[in-house]
Length: 385
Image (cartoon, rainbow, N blue to C red):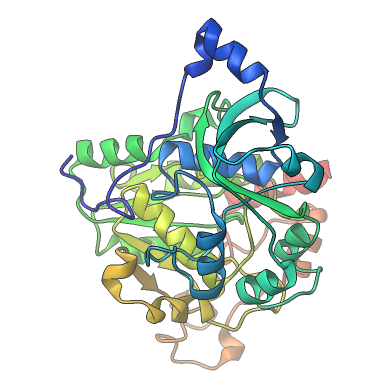
C-alpha cells in the first residue's frame, strides 16, 4: 500500500456487502427482525463500513463500551475516546437472540445493513454523560441525545448493504480513496482540518501555517448531523469552495467531506476526530483552542491537553496545537497570543451575536474577519431564513 500512515489498529476495515443481491439473501433479510437507525447510528454504520472508524467493524460490545467510557480505550487497550452504539427498546431487544442477525433499516424503512448481535446491555446514561461530556445537563446536545436514547444497546459486527448517495458527490471520498489520492500526488505528510462552522480568516491562517510544514492539506468539513442552529452543510460547503478556488494553492489542497455526526464532546471528540483522519491517511491534525466544544462545558485548550494523556505512538497522528488567532488592528495582520506584541484592545473581535446581526442586515463582514466571498454566501443564507 505504501501509505504515509497506517490506519488505527493496523488495517482499514471494510464492511460493505451485497448479500441481498441474490434471491436467497433477499429472502433471508426480509424475514429478520428490524431495528431502525437514527441519523447518528446511520452515519456510524456508513463510516464503519468504509473504514473511517477502524478498527471498529460494528457497534460496541458492553466490554468495549465500558472501557471507552471509563478509560478512553477499547477492551484490547487501543485508544478510543467516543462510544459508538446502537440503541433499541426493551421489547425489541427481548425478541433478538444472541449470535443472530437483525436488519438495520433507515428512517424510510428501507433495510440498509445487517447487525450480528453478539451483545445486549444497558448503561447508566448519566454516568456516560458525566465521563464523556463532563456534564449531565440536557442543554448539552450530546447529553440530550443519550438521555433520550432507547434503553438497550446492541453490540456486534455490521454489514452495509446499501450506502447512501453522498450529499456532496464532487467532494465525497472514502478513506481508501483519500489514501489513493495522496499516493497519486506523492504526499507523505498530510494535515487535516476539521470544522463544523463556516471557515473564516483565523481558520485560513491556521491551515496555511500548517501547509508550511507538510506536503498537502485535507480540508475535511463535517457534513453529518449537527445542532439545529449550526450553519447548514450546503452553506458551509459553498464557503469552502469559494475559498479554495481563490485563496489556496490548488495542487496542495484536497476538499473532501466527512459524513459524521457531531457529538460536541470537546476534548474526547478531538481525539475521535484525529483518529478518523488517521484512517483517511493524514499524518497531522489541527487542534484549535475549543475543538468540538459547545457552550462553556470545556476549558480553553482542554482539547489540546487531552492529547498529552497518551503516548504519541498510541494516537499515531501528530496534533498541531494552535493558539487563538485573530486580526491585529495595529499590525494589520493575523497573529496569535504567542506572536501578538500589542494589547488585547488591538484585537479585532466579533461576537456571534454581532456577526448574525450584520449578516441579517445584509452587511459584509470585515475582510479581516472573513473573506468577502464568504460574507456574501452567509448573507444569502440569513436572508433566506
